[in-house]
Image 1 (cartoon, rainbow over the protein chains, first blue to last red):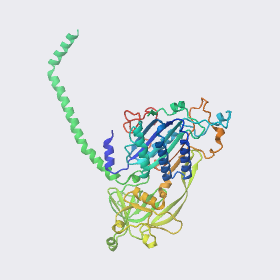
Image 2 (image 1 turned 60 degrees about the vertical axis):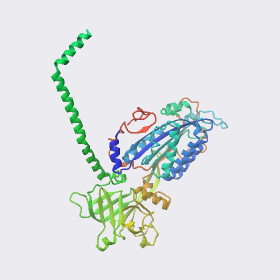
Image 3 (image 1 turned 135 degrees about the horizontal axis):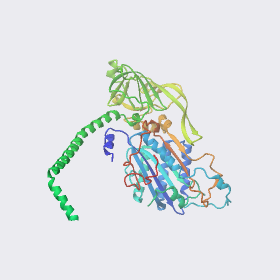
Image 4 (image 1 turned 135 degrees about the vertical axis):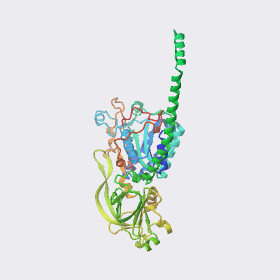
Length: 201
Length: 319
């Protein structure tokens, strides 16, 4: 490892930036209500025009909701890296946004919908939800900088995310989720194709 | 056949004892030089570390700033100071700089302190003190920094769907960090010698017309000053708001009544389900000068499913 460089940087008082992303796949008959929470967060973030403080609060809310629905946790994955350069961290955050965003359709495919015979009274309920949380923070959070592919580590990780907000050390927050709304479905096949890194909990 | 060969080898082995000795000697010599070099390199490394220390002890804010200029340690007279709230950059016009140093000094991490009464009686003018790469501006109570205010509106880039701050126009004003008492405002209950110790100060909330007096927050570090500002105004400092880029994958025209545009889950051509994403980034990604040469080292990083420290999608990321 480059612990030498780390130690020198730490010693010289440079700011350490950590960028990390956590995937969580929830499965079950009762997961669909989570979409309400997530969409509410999206709406609030839009209204606040992306104010970091507001986004941090939404992140806390999402984390708490996820912690409460722990029975539905199916699989998870995480990744991340530490940086000593703000620009590099910022670039990585942007890259993760693009990577997260290409795993779902942000715009429904209209050509498919047009040919569809719709029955407005029946709404399919999704049995799968994937939440992707990306944060960048200053300093260290050992709970997040580890392998989060087991239940306890992941729980500790979400709690650490909540704490980071209250420590005012968050520098970037991203929340992605799929499917987008009630009535859309995320099938196991789509998960396999688009989220290959998920590890069963 | 085999025993014969072995025997032959042994005899060769035995007959070339001097050569073996030479080989041993070489091995010894090599290992000794390696150790010696390693030992010799270590003080070198610490020296390098010390060098980074002096260069980097200004908080990362300045080290990553685009326009930050380096300046040798010392004391410089300051003629004029400007603060830009678009990027949080201070520009100082220095007097009596050495021949090869430019007269303007830019930094985003500038500590400020008031001149002590002793200095005032000694008719000391405002000056910049640079020590270990940390710059501190010492100014009299009535010193006015020029304050460049960026009128910013959040505009959505129609092509990327990204909400980003856009500077509409700039206004010029002045900011007098230590003149709170003069203006009769109760800003910053800083007492006693705290005033004379260099600290980070945030400008107060901008108001049109009239100058800015006092400060909006202070602290021993930039982040302390920033959170102190948040406590007072319940919003992020202008600099940080201007830096935050909001990005979202959702289109605003896509809300209610979109039930008819639902994706058919039975259609096998759909590789992806729908989704939404949004996020804010207050990291200054344009500040990195070595963008192109940057590679994430394979040994760094953490996460699930990585054995040697690279991602679970070890081949997946294109860099």
